[in-house]
Amino acid sequence: MGLPVLAVVLIVALWWLATVLFSIPEYLVPGPHVVVATIVELGPYLLEQAWVTLGETVIGFVLSIVIGVPVAMAISRFVIVERMLYPLLLAVNSVPKVAIAPILVVWMGFGQTPKIVMVILLCFFPIVLSTVSGLRSTPSELVELSRSLDASEMQEFRKIRFWWALPQIFVGLKNAISLAVIGAVIAEFVGASSGLGFVIVQSGASADTALAFAAIVLLALMSIILFYLLVWLEKMLLPWAEEHR
Image (cartoon, rainbow, N blue to C red; front, side, top):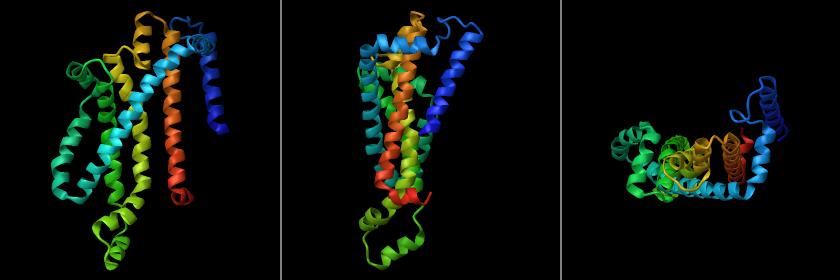
């Protein structure tokens, strides 16, 4: 824990030092003290907007898991599903999501729905990819052992394949959670009346860079907290995986 805190302190110190040495105006790059003062002054407002973005992020992320894991199971189990879906998934994943965001707003309006869909679009592919990789990494000896014990396919999946794949699945989840925050903010950039992405757009229009930096700091903190919640959950569910690292 000490090393990450030290890294943050060093970055903040370099940030402050750069603004002082190069005499950078506050309207271009505000110093850390200005950003902290803005967060304190506008704390209730910023927290309200952060809750909006957090809600969109978490809902979209959970839906990505609910949809992505079963799709990955079908892909790993049936070759025909893999051949049908993989090219489609690659095509959707390769499309710049910034280009899709305005279309989602046209289709779904300015509410929460297009933000959640954007989060799903960004999270879906890494979750599916890691889950398929994990399910296919089960040692053949374990599969043969389960079949020699007359285990059904469902029993084999529940007791062997799924647990063996979980470490790999968590790799995908940890990769996807930061993308979930990015997806929510991208959607808020295009069409929103609340959220930290909306705050950044509005502060840019009014040249209030301190407020924009404050929103960015909160987004960074949100990503860090969500990531380490997944790390904690992984340690709770898979202590045996942690011991072998």
